[in-house]
Image (cartoon, rainbow over all chains, first blue to last red):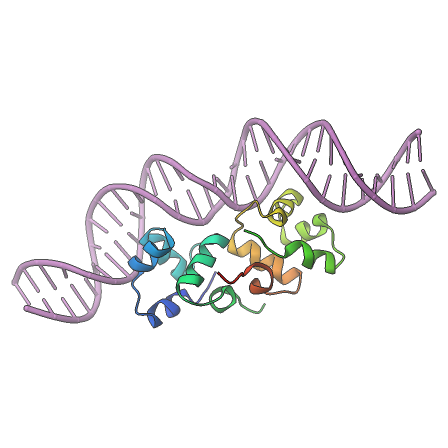
Length: 64
Length: 64
DNA sequence: ACATAAAGTAAAATATATATTACATATAGA
DNA sequence: TCTATATGTAATATATATTTTACTTTATGT
C-alpha cells in the first residue's frame, strides 16, 4: 500500500497531527498510512485526498 | 460511499460472482459495495478497479 | 543544556469490513 | 411448469483497521 500521502502533506506544510485532525483520525493512523503499513478505508482515503487537494489517483493509484 | 462499480461491471458483462472471484472476496461483499453500503478497503478498491480496467478516480472519486 | 514540537513505535482495546451460511426473489430458457 | 443463474438480504463469526495510552527519538529554538 505504497502511496504519496507524505509528499502531498509536506507540500502543504502540514503536520501529521493537523492532517489527522482534519480527517478525524489519530496521528498514529496517518503515520502508519504514510509508512504504507495500513490498508485504509475508502472513506478515509477520500477525506485525506480532499484535505490535501488531490484526487484518489494522485495519492493512491498505481498502474499495475 | 456511492460509486460506479456496478456500471463498470455491467459494461464488461461481468457477474457479481465472477468479479468477486477475481478480486478474492465474496459475492455479498461486491453486492454491498455496489449498493454503497460498505466502506471498502483501499486494497479492494484497487483490485476492483484493476479487474474492471478503470482507475480509482473512475470508480470512486467524486468532487466534493 | 533545556524545552518544545513533530514524528516513530508498540501493546491492548474497540469498531467495523469481510466471510460464512442460509434463505428469498427475479428472470430466462427448456 | 421446472430448472438454473444472478442477485438481494440477514445473522453470526472472524479478521483487521483504528483508537487509546504511553514511551522514545529527532530536530529546532532559546
